[in-house]
Image (cartoon, rainbow, N blue to C red; front, side, top):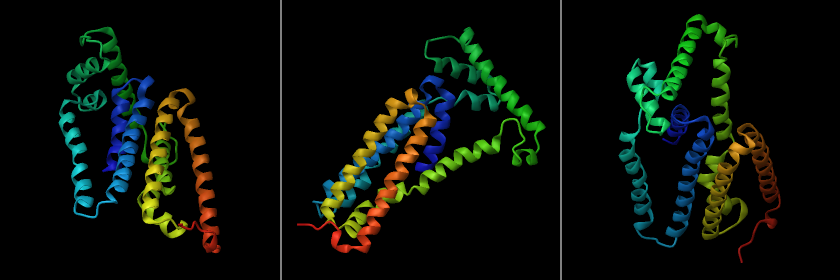
Length: 251
C-alpha cells in the first residue's frame, strides 16, 4: 500500500495544487510516512518491556486509526480537474478549478476560466502528439514529449531508492545491530528508534529546504551523502566480521 500511495498521491497533489507549493506538499506526504515509521519504532521499543498479548495486539489495532481517518476524509476530496477533462466532464472540472483556487471565485471568473483553458489546451496538445507519434518513435526517444525518458526517470528514481536498502535497513536494523555489531536486544531497539527519529528530523529539513535549494540539488546531494554513509557502514561491518574482537561488547 505504501507503493500505491507513494505513486498516486504526488500525482494528485501536482494536479490539484499551485506550482509554488507542490514541492512542500510532496514532502509533507513523505513526512507523514516518516513520522509513522518513527512512531512505530518507539512503540516497538516501549512494548519490548511488556511480554503479554498487548505486545502484538496493540500495534495491530493502533494502525487501524490512520486508514479510518483517511476513509472519512476521502469522500470530501474533489477529483483532479485534469482527470475530469480527460473524461469530458468539463463543467465539473471548471467547478473544481474554482474550488481549488480557494478565493470564493465563481466559475465565470477570468482566473478560473484561464486556469481551466490552460489545462484543457495542454491535454489537447498531448492527445494530438500521441496521435501523431508511433510506438517506435517513443522507444527511440523521438517523440516530442520524451515520454519514455520521463517514465525511466520517474520509475528509475523509485527503483534506485529501493536499491539503497532503506526498507531492509528499517525492518531489520535491530537484528543487524544484534548480530553484526553486538548490542543486546534492548539497546538495538532503542538505537533503531533513534535512527527513525533522525529520519524524521531529515524530513523536516527537507520541508524547509526543498523550495529554497531546489529538488534536483537535494536529490544529488542526498544521493551522495546516503551512498557515503552506506559505504562507511559496509566497511565497518566488514571489518567487524574480520576481527570479531573489535565488536561492541555489552558490559
